Amino acid sequence: MLLFAVILLVAAAIYVGGEFAKVDMCILADASRQQRFFCSTLMILLTIGLLPLSLRLFRFKAVSADLQRRKAAALACWGTIRLAVLGLLLVLNTFLYFAFGFEATYGYLAVVVLLCMPFVVPTKERCMAEVGEEKPAETITTDNTDEEANGSHSQL
Image 1: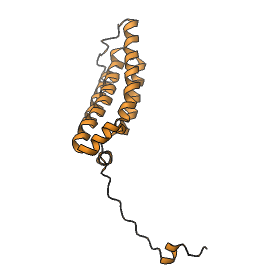
Image 2: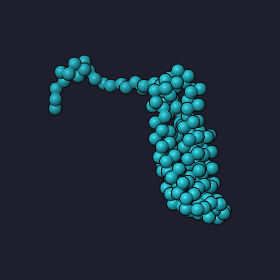
Image 3: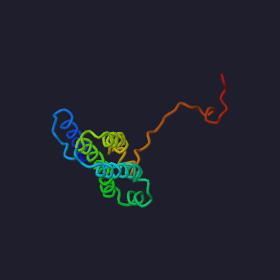
Image 4: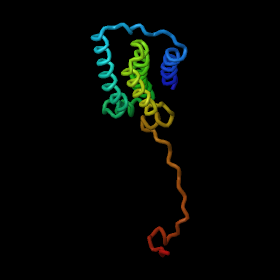
């Protein structure tokens, strides 16, 4: 959970610094058209390629088997990888938005990654479900009589 919070805080700090504190991060604003095209194409391909991979990481057979076998150690490893990939995409796209002088492409990519972040919040319940340790089912008590259980009750 700490890594998740740090990622969001770093991205928020970059955003607040560039948008409200007017920190000059336009270090790539004078890049050539070819450099801009190459960088935006690379980030689009990375973001579009790594987002589904990160969101579905725990569904791959090898990862799922590792989670069932090693439980907490595998969850820490694979969960860190998942958050690191998403965090890197979020922070990098947020930074590039300001570095290229408010280039909208990177802003949109950062928003898409940010919208995916709630799907990987490492809560205790989610972590337990990922390693196959479901919460114990609560017992449900009913006031059914024997006749209702046998299906011989009268309808109103």
